Amino acid sequence: MHAAIAVPGNSRTILTHLFGRGLEDDRYVVERFQSMADGEIRRRPGDTPATKKGRRKAKGEIVSLKAVRAMRPARNEIIVCTGMRIEGGVQYWGDLATGLFVERKRG
Image (cartoon, rainbow, N blue to C red):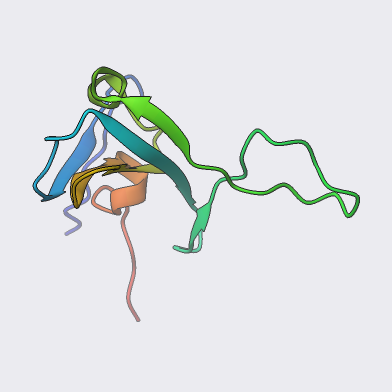
């Protein structure tokens, strides 16, 4: 018997993890990551133009508390918002990035 849970395609399930003092700052540095199919987590490339070698550098953007509270990750995305003045913030994990709804066979 399998205990896999099927999440409807239109649901917006996310995992919210507060760390440190949480959302007590006014401005946050936002970093975005993507979980790959093999379980690896990679930093998403930023919006900077490509270099001569064709690579893009990841960039953290600075946003307000209101923008942080309104953020919702894509299904395979992890968003980390760290306060600029305090040591704390929030992580938002999409449902596929958490691994909670993925059936994994061990053998």
